[in-house]
Image (cartoon, rainbow, N blue to C red; front, top):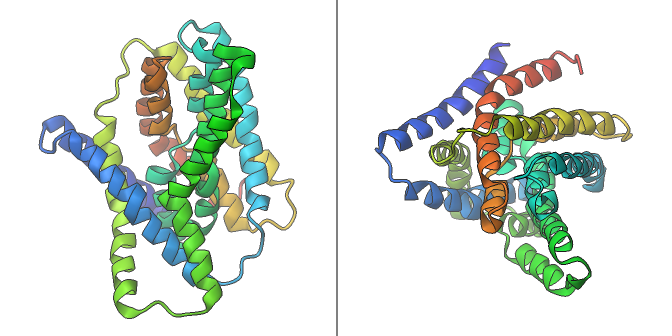
Length: 315
């Protein structure tokens, strides 16, 4: 239990610190966007590049992790789409914003730091495998769902697929994973100066990501959204991890650490991308915002419980 508290309390303590600084006005609201860009475009890519470039042979291929994780996500996505029909706000756009909220976890700013804090650098490998296709795949799915719901047979797939390819080609996290894999194949050691720079950036990724998350949470609101918020949180933090847990047990030969990290990531609260999607189309932005804020707060308890169950081999 002590190791769990040593993981959870510092992680969520930094989030609370960022939230407090934002609410007190000690750091401008624009700082959250800048820090988040730094984390996504430089610090986390440096961490993942270093991890992949230096790691040894892996015991399983990426698809062994993608299959149970994203199948569980897809089933949760479908459930959210169906249940969204019962809410006037969530059903807009074919329920795409609700589905995005139920499936898009906060993996980069919360899940990855938690995995590394509790499992060490090795936790970055399965987390990076999931992160490599997570955002691009879910943005494409949500965009297609909304387009089919609002335009039917007039949807042009080519521009959407082109946009996906461009997104992948410009995504710093994906590029860092590819570059790390290429570097590892060369067998070269990392030169001293670039290695020290990578270490500095990688070490900054976790604290800055958590502090930036706290800053951003100060802009979300809980007012008047209890019922749809509870539905979205139950899907994201209840149904999805249960489905992923069941599916992980069906994959033979999956390393225990990979299964634990995948389940931890599946249990993460909704990430900010769901709010960006909802706000872009003005569909369900209020309940999505509430689900992100309340879910992140609740995650302090649910994460501690999940890690306890995993460490005690009760699940």
